[in-house]
Length: 196
Image (cartoon, rainbow, N blue to C red; front, side, top):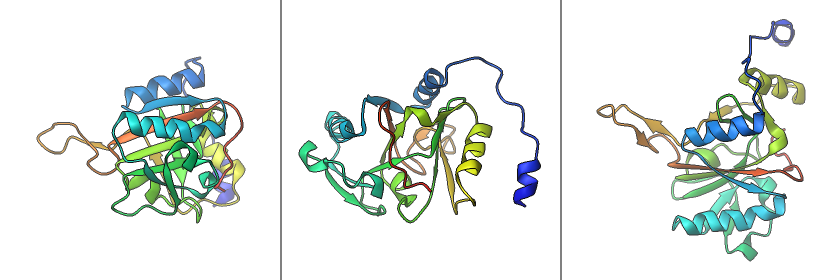
């Protein structure tokens, strides 16, 4: 199977010559995500605290293991490293990569990266190094295949807040997942991966 995948010709990609960082921001914003920027990973707790405060959200959250050692308490955020439960309102994760063409985050599950943290809370905050933005879906899959020996159990694609128009053809946010998706792009040091 792996040899078949490797031998399969790559599908055509987008022809536009846009900058991947600019394109990702434009597409993510068009999908109702919000974006913040950090020069280094150490700035993330303060940015999360400000985001939560500005929206009158609780300063309590759950996160993936890779963010457990950040200085959350000094920013006023009570953070727990664990999978989310039904009563958790905010989840903080990273993403394996971001797809510029669509404004989509690609995540996958592992013991240190339970998918419930991005799926159950009303607010999902994703922390992503700008260096992890790829051009297209094909680039995302190629990156995954080159960095892993096998496929993860679950791969998720997150394109803004959950939405549906099933009820009287009116778009409703948060119907099957988070009401809010906030992305913090880190331009400096890379996020330590709990994604492999």
